[in-house]
Length: 332
Image (cartoon, rainbow, N blue to C red; front, side):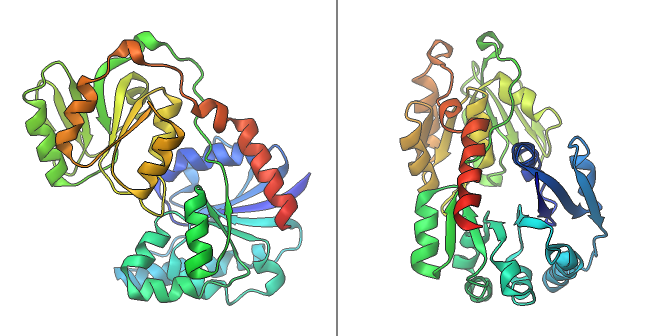
């Protein structure tokens, strides 16, 4: 097997499940070496891979955070320069520090670097400084995205080399339709206003339970707001609906794929990603313009309508594995 270097220095809790699944799939064709920060490494002990831990510098402020990221990138530079790795993959990145880093490594290394775009594009579009640095990420670097329209946007607007990859889905060892209850789970924080609207709506919908993520905790007979969910996958398994009150334009939501894999109906606010994925999974994903339309979706469906998601035929481990193998053949 060839060797590969996989790096994640951003410590995003919401990325852990997807990252683990992706590494499990990449392990089928490569010996993986994983580099993470010390505060993030514990999440990946379940993986049987070689692991190096970088001590995280905790500088305060926006400038301090980017300096910390750049120092961490400089710490992994020696690994990236090691000729034994067929490719170097960043599972996430901070735009400004990556832009600088991409200019501090030779061309032959840049050409085998793959970086996953999460909210980097949306942030660049909304911030002149980030846009400046995003443009200046070396054109040799390969950008990974989960949707064709995002690839086309990167190529047309930023002239970036972009590749569409398949999003892995979680393993669901056992699924019983009888476990499902009329419950709306919203694990993505949508802000105080959205939660207030749902709390108000829930008071008149006693037959439906709502479980929401929010900064201010709340509990009534059929509505719970919590800051964090230790039982995230159990809630997905039991919930008939997953509501995502966040706009996704040039990024995607991993929660959508996790919800589909657990045979949930997904309700999303209107956005570029919501429109795209609802066309791919009609009858499973519903796009609404505001909270008021949520009740129409819920009232129009019953548990008897639930079916196994089509995501198992589009994003299986075999599909994701083949997608990456084809990519490596084309770009390495």
